[in-house]
Every structure is written in C-alpha cells, then in structure tokens.
Amino acid sequence: MPHNYCPSPLEICMLFVTSEMHPFIKTGGLADVSSALPAALQRMGVEVKVLLPAYRQVKTKLPHARPICTLPDMRGEEKVVIRETFIEETGVTVLLVDYPAYYDRPGGPYQDEHGQDWHDNLMRFALLSKCAALLAGHASPLDWHPSLVHCNDWQTGLTPAYLHFWEHRHIKSVMTIHNLAYQGIFPSWGVTDVGLPESAYGLHGVEYYGNFSLLKAGLNYADHITTVSPTYAQEIQTDELGFGMQGLLQHRQLQLTGIVNGIDVRDWCPANDHNIPAPFSLHNLPDKALNKAALQRRMGLEVRDEVLLIGAISRLAHQKGLDVLLQVLPRLLEQPVQLALLGSGEQALEQGYRHLAAQYPGKVAAHIGFDESLSHLIEAGADVFAMPSRFEPCGLNQMYSMRYGTPPIVNATGGLADTVVDAQPDTIANGLATGFVFAPLNEDTLHSALLRALSLRQDKTSWEQLQRNGMNRDFSWDKSAAQYVRLYQDLLRT
Ligand code: ADP
Image (cartoon, rainbow, N blue to C red; front, side, top):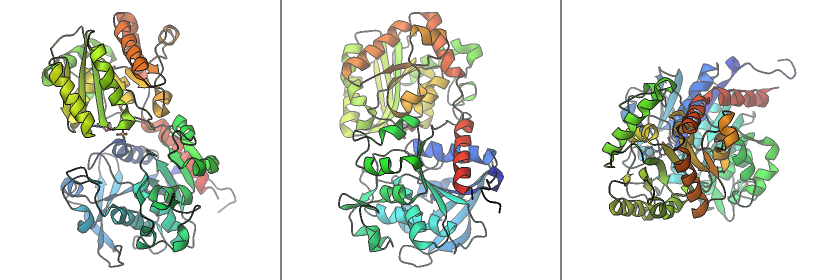
C-alpha cells in the first residue's frame, strides 16, 4: 500500500458497538444515533455492522436473527452465540450478542423494573465489549474483518482496552461520548474480573478516583474520541462539565472532535408521519393547528388555539432542568399558556408534574411514561418546545421540534447552543432564527424566554418566519456522517 494511502469510504468496514438501537431498544438519544448514523454511513459506502446485546425486547423484535458463530463468555466458556440479521430499509447488518443469562430478562437494558441498576452490569457490558474486541481481533471466527471499531458510551468502553492489551496488531478504535455524566463506575476489584491485567489499574489506565471506570478505559485506549457537538467537546474539558475527566480530555484534546448529531429525517418528517392526524409541511403550515387540537384532546387539555402550548419530552433527570420549569410554571400559567409533558424518571419530578397537572386541569397535562407515538404528536401539536437543560451533549428533540415548526426554547449549552439560533429582529429578518436561546439557566431567564415566545407569537408574520426557518434547516445525518467518514479516513491513513 502506498505511503499516506487514504482509503475510500467503500474500503472501510466498521463494527459499531452500542447498548441501544432504535427501533429495537431505546432509553434515549443513543438509540436514535445508533440506528441513524450507521444507516447514513452505509449510504456513503462504508460497510457497517452494529453489535448489540440480545435483550429480551430485541429478540422479540428480531426473531429471525440467525446464529453465525460462538464466542467465549466471561468465564471463557464457548457459550455466547452471535446472531446476524440484515435490516432491509437501511442496508445495515445487526449482530446480536445472545447470552440469555445476562440479557434475556424483564426490565430495561441497564435497570430492573424498579429503576435499580442490574447488579451484574459490569459483567454484562464487559461481555458486550469483549465480543466486539474478539470479532475485530486476529482470532475472530468470522471472515469479515472490520478496519475499525466505533464504540459508544461507557457500556462499550472496555473494547479499546481489550484491543490494546490483547492484540499484537493495532486495531483502530473511536470512542464516542454521548453523555459524560454516565461513566460506568465499578469497584476496583472488577478490573481483573473482566480480564484486564492489574497494570491497567492506574491513573493512566482505568482507575477513576479509587474506582474502575469503563468510560475512562475507552477514553484512554481509543485512538480517537468524539462527542456529539463542538460546544460540548469544549465544555467537557472544563471543571464544570468535565465530571472528573477534564484532565484526561484536555490531555487528549488533539484527538477529541465534536460532531453534531443529525436526526432521522424519515422517522421525523411532519409531511409523512403516521403518528399524527394531520401531516403538514411548509406548503400547508396552518394544518399544524389540527395536530394541536388533537394533542389537546388526547392529553385532556382545553382545546383552544390562541393559547401558547408548550411541549416537553424528556427523561426526568436533573440534567434536563425540568425542575426549573416546574418552579416557573405557576407564574407563567397566569398567561394564556398550556403545558403538555411526556417523560419519566426521578420520582420527585414525576410527582411534581402530576401534582401540577392536578392543580391546573385543562392547562397542564403530564403523561408519565415512555410513548413514542405521543412524542411525535407533541412535536407536531405544541407551539414551542422547552429544553432548559443544565447541560446537553447534543439533544435531539430541539431538532425534531424545529423540523415540526415548533420553535425550541433552550439554555445555551452543548448541542443546544450549536443547533438553535435565537430569535432577534435581525436573525428573524435574515432567516437564521429558529428558536429562543437564553443563559444562564435560572427561573428568571427561563421565564423571560417563555414570555418572549408568548409575545412573538402575537406577531403572526414573524412567528411563521421563525417556524419556516426551522423547518428549512437541514438536520439530516448526511453532513455529520461525512465528518465521521473523514475522521475514519484520517485514522486509517497509512
Ligand atoms: P437523552 O439522550 O439525554 O435522553 P436526547 O434529546 O438526545 O436526550 O434524546 C432523547 C430521545 O428520547 C428523543 O428521541 C426523545 O424523543 C426520546 N424520549 C425521551 N423521553 C421519552 C418519553 N418519555 N417518551 C418517548 N420518547 C422519549
């Protein structure tokens, strides 16, 4: 191969390792990225296989995945079955790690039905990482050899470490941080249990303040680190948002790139969305109001067009800042405003929103749970979408909402700062404004951003311009996938 040879996308084979993938298993944005990015890469000519645990829900949805090989489990017994299935719509192949003792159980991918972390998460995700390393490594039983491995979040963080310690040939890996707040922290004795040498436990290895961090393993041993927006790539190098990893990330800043997520524009297309009663586009924008009425009816809100209907769909976690919205709402509800919230998570927040809905019947509706179809109707039916996140690596809902003519109201952090342009007279006039951006996050700033939205909505022309600006933006994966391809090419350049 000539010196400085750069492979074309067609020559890149990639193993994409993830713990969730839409539509098979989803707790958050990682699932959306894990289905849309491989599909976009595949369209660009990269050959992608996605490796995913065969959770019970996944097996039910992919019953025909056929066994293609076996691999050793964490005890070294040849009991893990790798199954393969081809996804027609995207051209992506999915490989499942079928090991019922770890994955075939009720509850979620990380927690049981009561929200408790599975006690054996260390071994469950060490196994996923191990299978990835074995499939990419010299002793793989497959005749398919990936040119690199793309890992996602702590659940796959051990893969680069295994490749580092087990392989003589250097196999390149990329580690993507979708949310640095989740680091896969386990007791230090786990290091040897998962098959790493004791020497891996140290400041420049997998040790994290006296514990063992799977994410840190990935951040240390991967060839390159990416995260899901340029602003977040900067923020995670600071004391405020580095969650203890800022030193390591500063040290690796030349191998750290922020690439903003795209969205699946086929799944999230207001003109062609079977979840909403009145599909609409730029050509029949007034039909959006039919979805608003449907949403109001479905959630038990008063059916009134003149009120500002605020939508919110989120994990109810401190990160998302919805506690601040909860504080602001009683003040705001003196105005012609309604709230439609969909989410689940921390009990105090669930109770807080249930309580508010009981206090303001017809004005506040809270659906506690996970509901894919309702999430589409909220995006389509709400007037504005609230995302007052304390930090947000990228965020997807703000992009969905812009696409559905629902200007987002966001704190200027991470991917929210990178994807939403504040509505000011000049940015509205020049076609750039797409929502309402405020900072820092507190009750007053959020309150005044909401009031700004309420007031701008009275100006029908400016409001429609704002909606159109958002709907015209290109949030498809193509641009971001092209950046990933360039990154892979740089890594694989000889
Ligand atoms: P995060 O990954 O931090 O949860 P993102 O905005 O990146 O946040 O992605 C969240 C994804 O999960 C979006 O697709 C959002 O619509 C979806 N989601 C979150 N909570 C719910 C819910 N209760 N019901 C339906 N979809 C939800």
